[in-house]
Length: 499
Image (cartoon, rainbow, N blue to C red):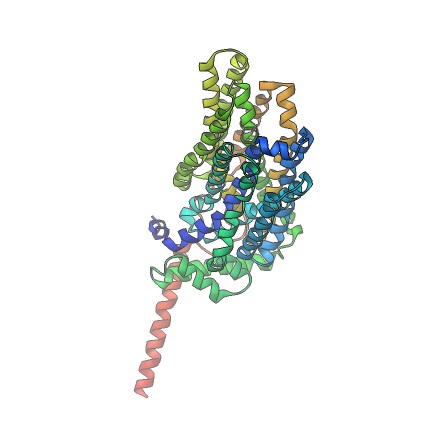
């Protein structure tokens, strides 16, 4: 076994990745807070008449803002760096939260949602890239997957804040949940200056000394210099080679066969994530519970419990993803989600309008199971897989294209799903049975496995020229060169003494 695989992730790397993931809470909170807020009686009364058209606009414009945020991050993450891009997103998120919490009319609230979506789009694209670039290869899945974990935690927090505020009265019932969105932004702004730059971005900017210092800190300054120099050399030489071949322009995304395959895989994994149907259930779960006979506070209570099962299952995924691998986990998850959705569809169709409370209870249980299955696979892996299959030259821009596809599909479902549930009811689930099966087949047939490899070594999978060897070979070479240098230095000293 390679010595690097025996190394544990040190506290500094954990601290950096966990702190960066605080920004991921924004996505979860901003996505989840609206579903309970617009159901509060005080909210409906304040913004009356709150028509279905306004309701749809309030939900979907958030996604529209996210599209532009992702696009901006595709440029910003390369030009000013991952760290400063995260900081900009936090500032914008804070402004958005203030606008929403102080809204005096629906137009102001929608504007705040658009601005908030812009900030979340930036975070959603940049944080997985940053964490994948500071993570050691053998634990990259776990660390890059923290983004999805914190998104889930944020979503769960939003559900419980909404449940708690349903017992409040007056404008506090909806203003406090909207103001709650400011909390992670404030935390990020307070600590961002202690976060290091990505070492790969520093090398891209030819700030080699800073990059070497960050690499050593990320390893806790533990170990001999040959290991640090080997990792530094591998990153630097491959990045220099890629930079000589590509200019990191948007046109480079489709310039070569390998890049076209990367973009295809990235778009597919993001598309299948949304086509799984997870956000349809996330956003409209309260309506599903009502259709199964639940009323009153029980509806928001179920939403709160539902929000917890995903993050708990995601912890298991993070622990094992670097052992299971990406490809196997994805296609097995696709099959399991198709089976679970089939059970939800069958039970809803047979007992949705009956008095059989046991069958309805099982329907709700399988809705919960769907979140668990999704969180064991797609939830983290689509954030892990996309950055790691990209070269440094196209990582930010390629990731932005794939995330935009994810957001656009989400916007479409936000608009279509309420109509579909009204017109065809439980039969709407059949769409997601088919898309999950299709996703499983496509992943099984064309997706390569990437676990355990450095970001530079993954280029070999796509048939590209790689001018650097694996870390252990480089380490031996670096060590031999260091020994030769010591011998030469010793000989020079002896000659000087003889003279």
